[in-house]
Image (cartoon, rainbow, N blue to C red; front, side):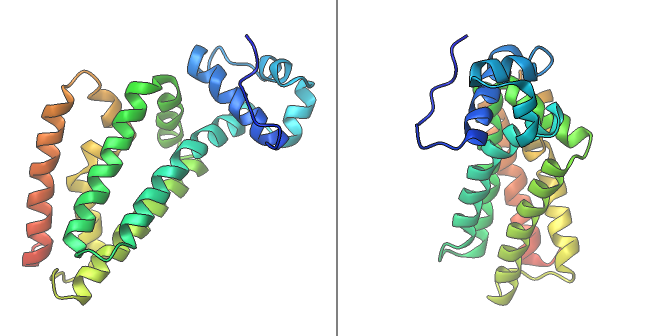
Length: 204
């Protein structure tokens, strides 16, 4: 297989990452080897280990590379000058859509994400923490503006995430692979309506 196309300005580690992602996309992680990645990168496998200490670390780097744009989109929404309830809705819907898009377009890469969550590796913990921090910030903004009425913000954020868990956590998202997307979108919209009313009424 020819190496994945990269720009001449890309760093060596970015080149390794691009090739690794393409191998996983085509063959799955079990059939991807550091030796084959090194071969397509035109280097020895020992050189790959200079950048990524293990195959697992390389897998986590591949996962982090496609999660970063999602986190950036959530941060952009959180920073928007819109009402907090509108921002929360768009953030949750955007996160759910991004996960489903990745599952449908790159199921082997999504499997790496599931593995990271099931084993609670660093890439999963950091992503979850970043998402929660952004959501917490918007809930705090809603409380400050009088839009939300919550007794304990941390508890409210936890309950909100519990309500939408099925739609944004990678494990149930993969389990629902065969469920029509339109049906899941309708269920998520209903769950969000309940959650946002709960925040506004002080139930959460």
